[in-house]
Length: 322
Image (cartoon, rainbow, N blue to C red; front, side, top):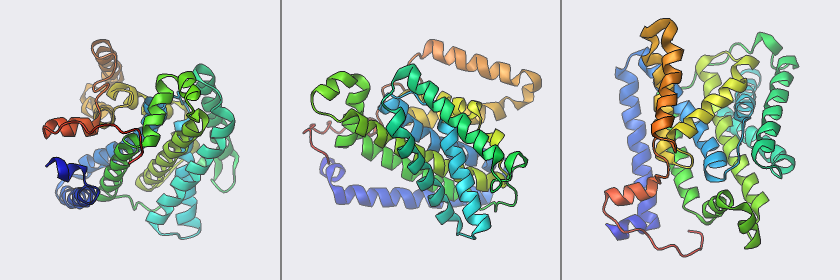
């Protein structure tokens, strides 16, 4: 079993089997569940994809970003314009949304990621506001009126398959040489730089990949709601995604998955409480953070958890990329 787990071919085979199983189960759920539950499932998957990207930036690399909604909006508008105005196929439109958002993450990363802590948070917040105002005043996005006529092509199996792909990609990245360098940057940037790690390069990589995930999530969001407007991507949206990452546990992929499920489903589960819903929701967050200050799954690594569950010894770190 140990040899099977450490073999690249076996891992690729397991990955394809998991992907196929996810698509099969999602298709069954899609056919038997009510539209209301499917809609909740869709938003859980979309939030999970975006939160995994932010987890890489904030949880793994240690860069506080408050502008994730900006990348989401870039992906949403890019995908909507590509599919509606230029009749691009849906999945290609999603990819275009992710790539354009990733490019913006790369461009913005160079000047802003030389900042750290509060200064970086303020810079990313300012970037998000600039993007929102631009979309409000651009003719091609239909300004404050909103962008209409987007095809509702997003389905539950597609979202779940992309979410599983994102999880596998993040696990692989965190277990690679680049992932370990990003963790080193988070733990001590000065010491990392002193031993030869190009901290700016790894921070920009994390930012671009995180922005790509946000763009993909935004594109799926646009093709779920079929209508988008700049107010959908305000500061509170960035806070929502950050809350998922913090509640689940910074740097923890299992935590991000649980955080996305809890924080997306909780407002719907509390809908019966009517006016007190948001108050109970806030109280729930406060109680969790008091009793679990490092998040629900703080410090839990998905690959190590799987190894532990399968009673496999941890692979010896060689310091080289896999």
